[in-house]
Picture 1 (cartoon, rainbow, N blue to C red):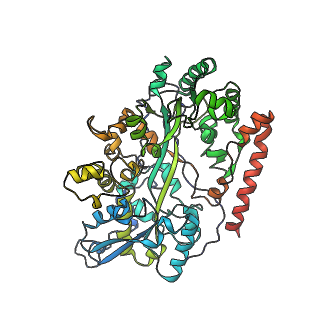
Picture 2 (cartoon, rainbow, N blue to C red):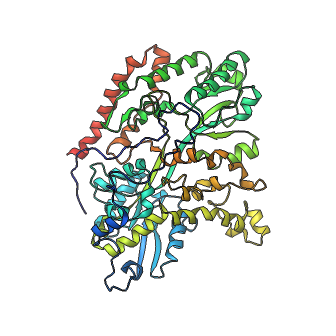
Picture 3 (cartoon, rainbow, N blue to C red):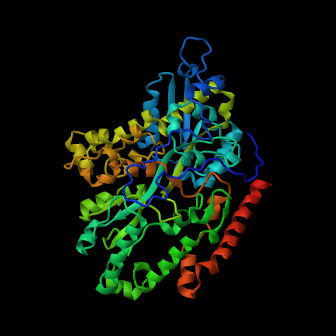
Length: 550
């Protein structure tokens, strides 16, 4: 097993959305599409890179025109808790089996030592290290805390495969950054799932309050105008209705101050927490405190006042009394069925509003990766096969199209319940227990692609939409057909840069509401608190980095 004693160094590329800084609601001409012409690809096309990587790509030892990996008998083993433990319903396994149908020489199996029930991410890391030592390491594995897998020498550098892969040209620059090792030397894996954020707007509540429904391509000023209109009514109505807010408590350093990365005050360029360098984020938090004083935020009311207004209702958004809310792809996993179909709530999905002057219009979400075993460096024929599978489950258009097709196939086969399946002539015992239409939508989509390829995006079930007489019509949000919104999602940032060492654990100790509480309860300003929070978080980070530096 490779060993690394690595410093915490800088990583590569940063690309903001082309919409950044625009002050107009007409975003039709600002659709950002990444064409892969960036530092990683170095302005060379696929054929140029193939000429440089002949020892890795299209290995054909007998010269018959068929790559060796398509002729060599092999079983590829993947591992990880991704997409549920029940292997016969697992979408990664299902994709692997469909991919292998093209290659009679290959079978795909899951290593069931690494199910979710085996333990958390750190336990799974320890298990993978042990597997690498006893010679039982899987070929492909879920690498949630990817910096740790790289630091342990467990990952294969997939640079040659990405550079010679036409589909990889469409991977967003933010995703490429996430896929890069913290020392900038290797590409450690491929993002297979991404859950970007957006904003939900309760159009039914706005109509009830006679508040104008904002433009879909809204600005921050329009977003605040909507909130203010509802907040003003909140103050005077003595009813359980609140303006709500987007997720700028986490993303404000980037959104308001254009801090690179910026999630939670972490500067991606300097690799340090820098709260005091985000004064506009601080102004926003001070505004939040002033709104607390005006009664705009349900969970900042006294318990007696909250019960007086709302009785026992506790889910501001889901109970229908917040005008806006921070949503992400996971909130569309099952919620539309509950909120729209069962509760009759009327709401729409909106993009992140165009940022105010000096800010950056950027969505954030969780990225999840799969990585290839470092042992494949000794078997480049097998490595080609494993990469083709990795591409199929992550950024490749063929594999993503196959994934999206499962939804309609399962609707036709199973319906939406065991009763429907039995009515179709099926056996109730054969009805899926976890993954079936209308239950876990993210398993049929893996969130949203980090590929910016419009052809791939057009195949996403939310873009295609559902017939009005279909039980999945609750997932029809017109904004998903909007190319600006599509590209805002695909070009999104990650929340925590788990490819950087120590950062994931540091964020585990970041209490994001603590500064708000101190401003509210103790009368401090942002400027009073920011330097101390910077020092505190960097001290925590440095403590973790000692492990890597030594």
